[in-house]
Length: 122
Image (tube, helix red, strand yellow):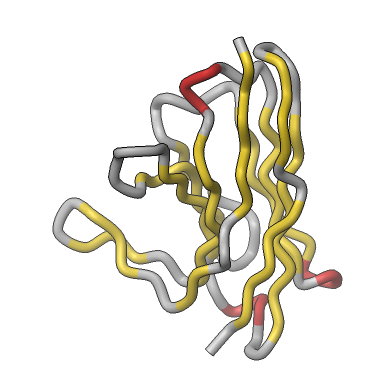
């Protein structure tokens, strides 16, 4: 089981930027794809972005394409989510996920972080 700890959330004005970090421990971080998901109040958790184990391939939800960038630093066992041009609709709790796999229109993951709150004021 991989332990994941997110950081970097906070309050930002619309149009601003934040960088989320997810520190991993417990298993071989470099062997797994990693991902970010988010859950807004009253909504289901949704996919945001994934990155493969080498960092050579990424995928994004349409709603964040061109604004968010996922990356990973294997030496630091950390995955990042750079969020630019933030909108009020991006307000949510953001969760880091280890080994996300698409399954039946959703995702199955091996581990979740505890989440970090991102609030975008308009």
